[in-house]
Amino acid sequence: MFRENAPPGEDIRSVLGSIIDRNSSKWLRFIAAILKNEADAEDVIQEAVRRVLVRNKSLSSHEQVKKYLGRAIGNTALELYHRRKRERQYQIPIKEHLLLLANSRSPHARLEEREIAEYREQLLQMLQEGLLLLPQKQKEAVRLTILESCGQSIRDVGINCGIPYSTLRHRSKQGLRMLRRFLVRRMRERIQNSELRTPDHKKQGLNS
Figure 1 (cartoon, rainbow, N blue to C red):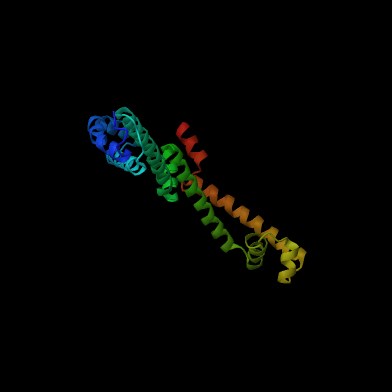
Figure 2 (cartoon, rainbow, N blue to C red; figure 1 turned 90 degrees about the horizontal axis):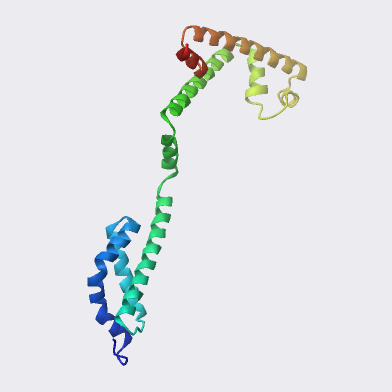
């Protein structure tokens, strides 16, 4: 039992050492299980002891000091746990988040995505080849009305370029028709030569 006339801060200091010696191992194991880090567990106990000493609260018994210090340790541990959790959330860059999401997909899904990307790249290459083969007027009409129209209608594009609407519309349709024929022919050639195999064609080949 503490002396009632003794300074309260002095009472706490007189028993903290013995309380910590008897219970520190148990508290360290408990905190380390929460924080997953022994160094953080030691910091928690030191910070809790510092707070208890700063508050210098008057307590009437050894057991009350032990409970008071235990509550301070528990609160400090929870505060550090939530702070570490917030820090981990902000420490991972966006690029690493995307990599984690990508790695979480199955190998078959990643393989299919790569095949689709290669397929699109080949289609874009064929589209560029077809555009180069168009007559100049049709190629210019496709460029103005499709590739660089920025959402404008053919009529508005014709007004801005000084080309009659009917003329521009006719040239654009001709160019698209020729381009479509070229793409179909090239795709058939590549499929026959196994240069271009869509994911569906590959699955059919595996199942046959």
